[in-house]
Image 1: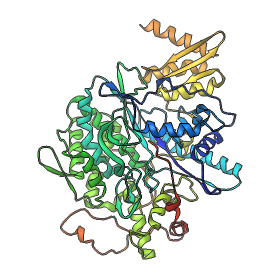
Image 2: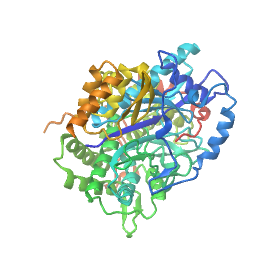
Image 3: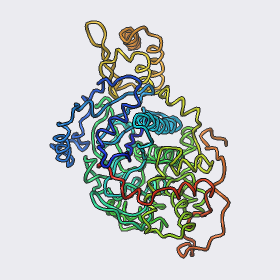
Image 4: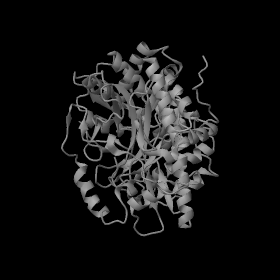
Length: 508
Length: 64
């Protein structure tokens, strides 16, 4: 079983001033979540977005020039880079910070879909709680947050799904196996969007499409993430032992409100990675994947076909069926979660072709379309009415008093796979079988002794020297649980590390 | 077979309303969702309260 996690950049607005400063507002929002004052602890040493999985390091990203321009402006602000980022690691092992002027919540690493859903929903509640506290300071409900991916003016922000992958898998096999799957995955995981747009260009109302991100896909492969966005991101930032692992960093996905869509998005991708590792992924290659991703998104009737390199033409449904059948052949009976995913995946594909109404409350694009078409009938308006883009936006509002999806959820019209109790637990603790939970435990037990922290390493201060806790190869769930036991009961991080290192030495 | 992952459905979407067939539905192609009404007393009211110009005013910087 592999690890996975989701990073979500939220849209943020403030309505009591003529022009909002997104740097300040995102920073203040993150800090509003803190009970104490902010302390700089995130260690950026493990982050280098210039490393490319194709085996080289790029000298610059397309976004660098724009970032440099922003940096010049930011240099005049009365706070440092670290202040602006306001990086927090939470007691559940999640990261919450200001990323490119968007509050971002990154779940802790998860091993099961059930944990991932609870952690993703916990993220919604964490950003909401931060907004409520910020609004208390501002004296009104001025801050709104959106779990979506576009501002309808050509600016997109991401929801990235990440997977731990063995470095032994040849990189070209990952690309070949994943690209057709990712291009067609939007029929399950698309969040739906009113109108079309392109990077830095205006919004054209009138057409409903499956995905929020498809309009912003401009390359098949690439290391960039803010411009010329690729279907397959080649950033090589493993956050783990580089000799053994890759982190597959997928930027094509939409932010989902439906838990069921999140489950299938990540779950089916996990299954396809298993197929690739076994060398049995379907042998399909798209002729023009970038064109195809847009073409399929702009066809909510699911009739469009895209051309393969061998001349065949397949619809998005047929592409997904191809992968689903391969997974069923190879992975049936692997474990309970895979079995559930296989059943739900094939059932969803069948319903998409036969009776889509049964997917309302399960898939976002279907749910949003149903909601908007009902409204259009009631109000006698058409798809080109600008009101619909506003309703699209409000579908993603994370305030339960305002958000349309959360209104449907409150009315009991969507599928729940989490419980409120599970989300409350996810707010307090990370998964008990991953280093994410262990990271959270360290934050809970030894907050004052953490000198620096990041995904794979924690540095503890203590006495005359620092103590490094390396988690770059700590992925065995039994080993994680044993380590958590040590940190749970140790008097200090130094004691915990001494005990843990001694045990490992004895085992070897 | 019982799966602990199986989601619990609290309630079906809505009572379906009669709808006219969409031209694209003819010939056995994909069908549109049953577009019944959401709860008119709450959600439709919530939708009507949304400012039609909300999206026009909404501006973000490019993220990742």
